[in-house]
Image (cartoon, one colour):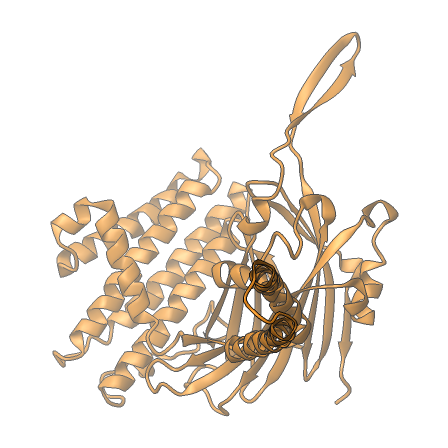
Length: 461
C-alpha cells in the first residue's frame, strides 16, 4: 500500500510526503501530544496564525523511479508538439533530474566510510553526466524555443556543480581516494567551463555570489512551470465568522435595547441616574460582546474545516487536486480510539500531562490522467516548529560525575519531547505510526519512529 513518510526537513522543521493516483482520495491526520511544561496551548498558540506562517503545502508531478527518469529523450525532441508542449516536456525532464540528483546526493552523504562514499559518488557523476548529455543532444533550432532550453541548461549545469561541490565539502576526507576526488572536481570544472563557453552568465553576475544565487533561484522557478502546481488557499471560515459576529451583535443589541426601553419607562425625565444606568448598560455590552463572539465562534467552528488549497496546472489553469484542512486544539475525549490506544502504549514515565493539537488534511485528485511519464502526484506538507521553540526554556544545566576523587562536570541542555501520531488513510488501507519528536530551543534533535507501535491495516481487495 502507498504510505506517507514523515522525516526531518531543516533544523526546526519536518515534512510529510505522500503520493496520489488519478481520482484518488486520502486523508492525513497528525495528533500532537505536547507536554504542558512547554507552555503551548490554545491561549498561547493561535491555530490560524500558526497555519498561515508555519505550515506550507507543495504539490507536483512525481515518479517513483527518480534515479532513472521515466521521461524519455523523445519528450524534449523539437519535433514533438507545439511550443508549449516543448517547454512543459523540457521542464518535466529537467525537474526530474534535479529531484533525482538532490535525492541521490542526500543518500550518498549518509555513507560515512570513505571506501563506500567515493565509489557511490563517482557512479553518481557518470549517471548525471549521461543525463546532461541527453538533454544537450536536443538543442532546438527554433529561436523561439532557445530561451527555454538555455535557461534549463544553465540552471541544471550550475545546480549539478553545486551539488557535487557540496558532496566533496561534506563527505568523508581520505587521501586514499584522491583519484576519485579528482574525477568529481574535473566534472565540476567542465560544467563551469561549459557555462562560460555558452556565455550563460555575465562576469558581473558571476563575481557577486548573491546575484548568481538569486538568478539561479529564478531559473529554478522557471523550470517548475507546468510541473509544480500553483496553489490557491481559500479561507472557509470567513463568511461563517461574519455570520457569527452579526448574530451575536444582533442578540446583544436586542437585549440592550430591551433594558434601555424598560429604563426609559421607569424614568419620566432625563436624570443623572438614567445617564449612569445607560452608561453601565453600554459598557457591559462592549465588555461581553467580544467574549461572547469568541465563545460562539469556537463552539460553532469546532470540527469544521478551516482552509482549502486548490492546486492548479500552471499551463492550463485546470484544478489538478484539492486539500481540505483542519487545525485545532482538541480535548482528550476527541481522540479517535485507535490513536488513543497508540498513545497509551508509551512507557509510564512518558505519560505526563499534555495538551493535544490535531491537524487533518483531506486530499482529492480531480483529473483522471496525468502528463506522460508520470503516474502520481506528490503532496508535501512542511511544518515549521519555530513557533513552538519560542516558548521553550534555554535551560542549560550541569551534570556532575565522580571520577575517583575528582569531581567533573558537563553542560547539558534542556530538551522536550513531543509525541506525534500520524494516521494516513487511503483506499488501500490505514497507516498508523507514533513518533517521538525531541527538540530544544534551537533545533529538532531527533525524530524517532516507534516501529513496535506502528499499525498497518490493508483493505481487502
